Length: 287
Ligand code: NAP
Image 1 (cartoon, rainbow, N blue to C red):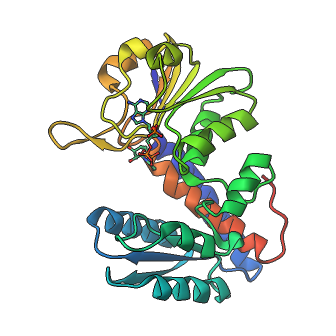
Image 2 (cartoon, rainbow, N blue to C red):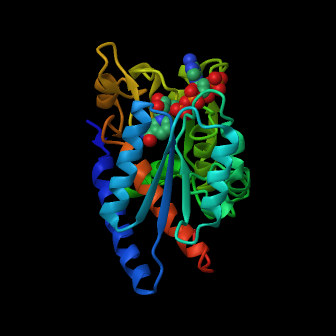
């Protein structure tokens, strides 16, 4: 039977650390602030934004919400980002994706000041991650690394396989594992012999977006399986990319969905907001 990595518990520990650090910063006159921008009325985005605001409130981080109608133009959105770039009480800016059709997400991300880019999606921050000289790490992959650390799982020398190569999860995930000296393979929809490659993994990270995609025959006995997926099963119930019921008995460690990687993402966003506040107050960030 596998060790079930409890993301809720690990996230709670991270958040407690954030709350302590926020209190210490406030004593020094620094009040970390996050602006969350939401455009349109996508219900899932609304839930994410509410959760982020709630997490800020619980840890003492000041937050502002900017809810714009779906009819917002690119120019209006870019103007708001520029205003937030200049705002002294805002250290982090997050524009909730997806944006409504007609808005250019890439241009919006590039307009955010790299020092306030708490999602770490700006090309400057992506480049920094690539060379290993970064201020921020993208929240979901950073959350996965924190989960591995929480179990004292050594990455160095391990065979790591990441399924998925998106800019927000797969690619940075692979890079973080590489920074920790894993031997990393990235798989995608054109990969051949996927099951065989996955079976070679000591650490398998699934970020595919397909319910129960990773089956028991695709994992090595005793492997560490991290499920980033947030999918819906045939009954509309939230599930991951991993067929948990059948994979769990075979592996050494596994994250559940819900309650695995998901809670870590917001916890890491809070950490990045503190880092941003420090950076903007002239403090060197220690990675
Ligand atoms: P994405 O942009 O759709 O990327 C999916 C990746 O999976 C692509 O690289 C795609 O390959 C690959 N893929 C698709 N079908 C495949 C197949 N049959 N075999 C091998 N690879 C295949 O998705 P994403 O944004 O990275 O998100 C992935 C999942 O993580 C989703 O379920 C999402 O909801 C979840 N997620 C969770 C969190 C969290 O906080 N827990 C955060 C972000 C995302 P190609 O590149 O070749 O198309």
